[in-house]
Figure 1 (cartoon, helix red, strand yellow):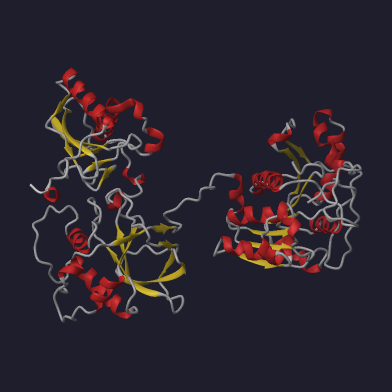
Figure 2: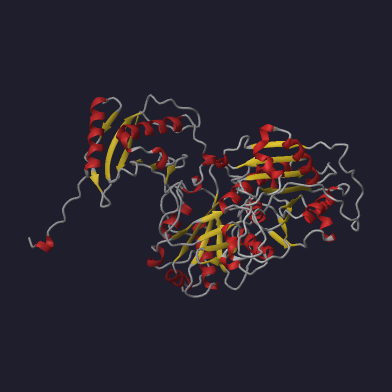
Length: 612
């Protein structure tokens, strides 16, 4: 036989796989009543070794609603060529299809997170133990299908490398067939909407299915059409006829393709019901056909009736599955839902000062879901030196801080409203006491502090008033003074009262500096000459201390209590690292008085000597 016709050498199991096979045979020999190896291993071109086994499962108890097991069950173990990946367990049938944690009808999900749960040192015994536990849980009805994210579509993520992400946010349940629109936001993002957003928007059909897809949706158009009509592939195959679901889908797909530009890919969305939650919003599965296939669809002859007839190359074309980021409120839970900052969700926040603390506070509040943020800053521009610790970039240099920060916040969220308001003591800001949920002064401006005290005296105010600052020597100690709506004294007076308490308490000595004037050398001059002295501190210090102050304020938002929070970052070694001093008015405190828009701000007592 010539050399060029010589057969390629048969693939062989590597040392890792040979060890697993040896251990499997040894276990079968030791426990013949529980485990049996049924035949010789088969080696795939990918290097995976398949070995059939039989487990005797008669002893596994069954609970009503659980998976029905026979006296014995057969499986196929897939042994990968690398120990980094755990062996897979497959069934030679689709009888388990539709059970939670059965993938594509034939693969058992015995490892939810293989990176954390798979230890190669355990070898085959740990795999069989996981399989036995899976069978026990399934038979005992312990699996909760409502928490299985991809349960509606065979338990697997459908995604083809190189496809864009489709973002769905509109509260549409997609229970009837309709045409929707995809609008490009970037090269890797498309937004799904029921409205055309601009000239780049393209049509796509949305088809709600009557049943879920336990075997997944397939890889070709032909496979998808079959599974739309026959999700378990258990019914006899018949020609596609008028009014079959796949025929309706195909017709809608062709109509959408004809109305989209030549040379573009045609997208579609399937709305798949959850097998355990039929009344809940449907799972959205998105795919597309390549541009060449989409153009072929556009050439399919129009038919008065009957299912469209597709060329064989179109029916056999590969579907490119797109990751659909389903962000509809009805199907998602915010990751911060139980954290203190969730108190800012859907609120209106006035933030005065866009510097070291204010710029970071604004981003944290925006990410927490505030509906509206009103920014106020004296109008100083961003300079290169500020990038060391403030929340700006090179592109912001020369821009007004408030304007630059507003642009950044608007890039974080589409649904956020950001506006620029005048600086205190503008009379326009008096409305903040009634309009905003919280007003935060991060300026360290005496004028701003006096104006905040003025807001505190407005009868029936709605807003929580807060001042937050840090120390001048390290920016790693923080102070947050809060004036609740039922308190007529503002944060500056509360801070002054707290200072007397702190300075009289030896256990709070690490915080004394917050009420002391800076000593020589404690501040820095960032540039030569008569530059304004400022505090020491890095971005890491300011992000850390600001995050602590925002979280502490979040704890106050639902049930505000007037007082002052003190906190320190862990690397300072300060004890206590967090302390709250509740506020109680004293006879010597200035009395509260009615306020009008033209009333002058009352003088404020000395406050903390701190900086932002």
